[in-house]
Image 1: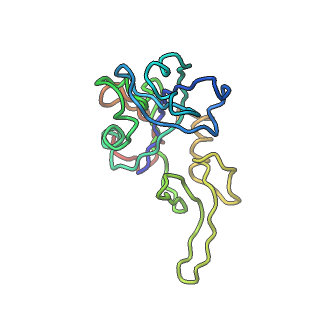
Image 2: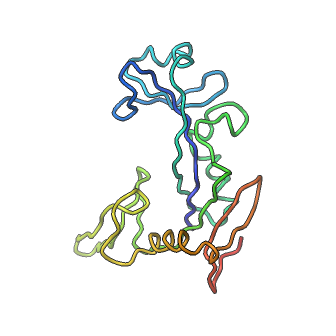
Length: 188
């Protein structure tokens, strides 16, 4: 099963290269027991005293974790993601953390979904016999809808239109899971 987890990434960057984070080098570091991604142009920007003077912000995103249960997905996130282990002892001090104010989604199965080694998703069929591939970017990575029915895009659309058709369950330390109500509902 594939879970979409809402995450918050803490980042810092000086204004020496402008206020854009895109195109700059980045490094995961800890300053004063706080984990963060530092976007920089010059190595001296990584010094703790310079990081303390830089603009620190947060941005929202998603982490995708394959697991058998939502509890396993949360545990796998905290154990496997490097940025989720960068910082002090509290979850709030980590460079990447699960946003408990938003739900974790149990995504529907998609026969065309392929996870690449770099963490990106591909969509399509792969015919290994004659080495023909019909692969493209997946909606999970922000690509346009494919020309065929996409179960993940349909799921997200139904969730926005009819949230009452979905089950909300609470588990663990304040986590919320949303999954679609179906005749074959997965165990929570």
